[in-house]
Image 1 (cartoon, rainbow, N blue to C red):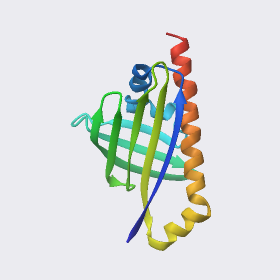
Image 2 (cartoon, helix red, strand yellow; image 1 turned 180 degrees about the horizontal axis):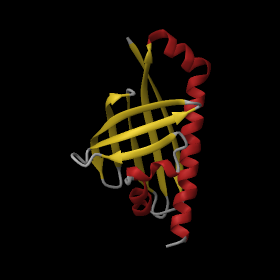
Image 3 (tube, one colour; image 1 turned 90 degrees about the vertical axis):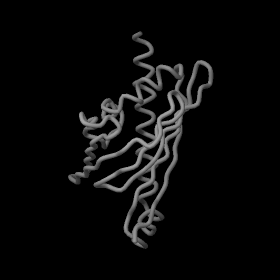
Image 4 (cartoon, rainbow, N blue to C red; image 1 turned 180 degrees about the vertical axis):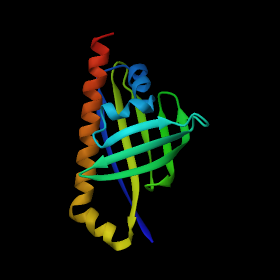
Length: 148
């Protein structure tokens, strides 16, 4: 049986919520700021399904995700429907001129081994990677803001 591990990180971006939302909600652009994500493709048959590819240290994972909930400028929530088991949400908070972006991601790892790995190192690696991704997103958003 799999153990689900969850991590949350957030960042404040000095850009309006409309800009932050428009950049993040374009899923196919995520490889610009998410280090391990090689590609995201929206399914032409169903725009609620996206095809993801992740690569790190010679390992490659693929999965399909389905949008569970999208509320403009508030939340994007997903779950995988095949491949790498994961789920999560990106939440957006309007701070009137700046925005908070909070990412929560959960993923399944087999039983006790997953819990031990999480306690030893995996959780820190995942959280530091996601935090670095949010930092890159912030830089990207501020660059887009400066050039508009």
